[in-house]
Image (cartoon, rainbow, N blue to C red; front, side, top):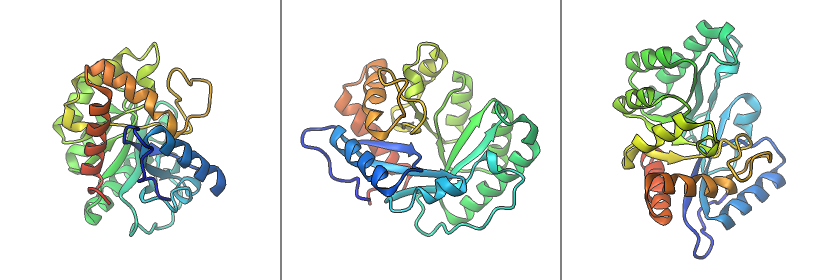
Length: 248
């Protein structure tokens, strides 16, 4: 799918994390709405069999096995057309009982990504120490997606060279920790995402999220950081292209 043609006079935003499990027609319609809103590039992200399949046809794809696949027999994936390995990582909030299997799967995919020379897209929730420990053992490059941690965790990840991706959570009333973290990310390391179909930003909460809604998150972040919206859109797109391999 071609997400590269901007709407006339619209900002050029890059949604670095969206999931698609609908029909091809539904996905194409969502891409059209995104383009009309100024979201000119989308990375479709996998993590399970169905989510990996939903990335097909996108110019930017991340495929891999997420924490919910830990302990399962998993087939090999073809990374020839992938821009990244993901999403991968640890989640002890929803799946504390599979910690050991999650760590093994996470480490195995980090090693795989290193061998392929690809960045990774990492999910981490309530697993700060283990995430940092594994990333220090297996130096990697990539994106911490949908960041929800503390400013100190954010700094530690920045020290390891990661890009920090901010989702619509930053617009939620209770997410002051995310806003604090979003303020400290350097200009050269911040990117944005929807995590569609989850986490629709204010004022779209209550609806299934979609890439077109990235504009709300980006405007909020631009105001939060005291940056003109057009400059912030260009900055975050440039950062995403940098980590994902440049302009295609």
